[in-house]
Each structure stands twice: as structure tokens, then as C-alpha cells.
Image (cartoon, rainbow, N blue to C red; front, top):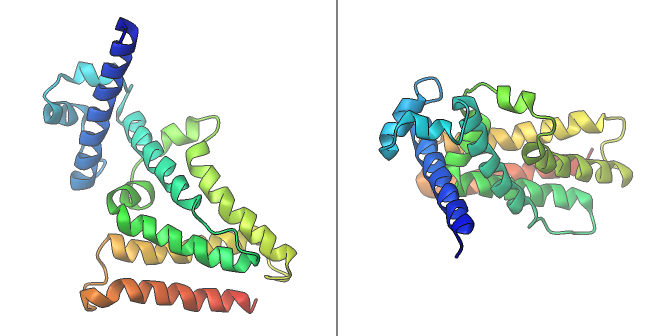
Length: 203
């Protein structure tokens, strides 16, 4: 391995170290209570080291979200290409919930935790978030072409679907279903999704 390759690897390792530590602290303390110094202390480096990689806390949080959305998109790639797009919607919902259940920390950082969105708002194109959301819109448009959701705005339909599945996922991630037996919670969420999908088939 040459010098340039070794330096690039070391740079990536340091960046990963910063991101992993920052994600844990954000989840534990919330965005507002986290500082660059606190993250630096966690990895036993100076704040100046972190500033070599990220200009501020917002950019660091955005980088963590980018990682999360990249993984999220990979989950969406497993959606089965069934003939009826309404069934693809159900499959997409199941995949969405599975991501939240298997990656609760990432899901919290992506969709629940209150944090400034300046880095995203200033980005020319937020591919990481939009490309996953576009899959939902594409499938809804395919449903409309097949005669579903007559007289409804496809954009609003997609937003309703996302809102419902996000609600189910958030209940799980934030542990708001503890009043129900633990061995029943996951099935309750999936059954609720099934009922919702059955309603959509009738529209």
C-alpha cells in the first residue's frame, strides 16, 4: 500500500470513528445538548481534529443521516417487483417497518430527533433522502395508472401512506407500545399495516 492509499484509509477510519461516536451521543443526549467538544472527548481527540472533517455540528449530523439514508435505500431495493403495484405498496411498507425495527437508532436520527436541517436545506440536491421517497411516489403513480385512488392527488396519497407507516415505526422505535405484551407488538404493527393496505385496495 502506497503512502496516499494509507493516508486515505486513515482519513476514512478517523471519519468513521467520529461519526460512530457522534451518533451514539446524539441518541443519548439529543441534538441541542451535544457539542463538538463532547464528541472530541468521547474519541479522545481535540475538537480541532473534528473540524478537519466537519465544519460544524450540523454538517456532522447531516453526514450521519446520509449514512442512514444510504442503508435505508438498500432496504427499499429488496421490494418485490410484483405485478400489482398495490401489493408493492404493502411490501414497501413492510420493508420500511423492518428497517425501523432493525435500525432504531438510525430511524430516530432520520425521522424523529429534533435537529436543524440547515445542511440539507443548503444542499443542491439531497439524493440520500429523496431517492427513497421517490420510490414511494413512483409506486403510487403506478397504482393510479392501474385505476387505484381515483380522484385523489397522488402526492397527497403518498404523504398519507408515509405518515401512517412512519407512525407505526415511531411507536416501536420510541417504545410507546409497552402496554401490550412484548411478543405481540411486532405482529400488531404488521397486522395494522395489512388492514391499511386492504383499505387502500378499495380506493
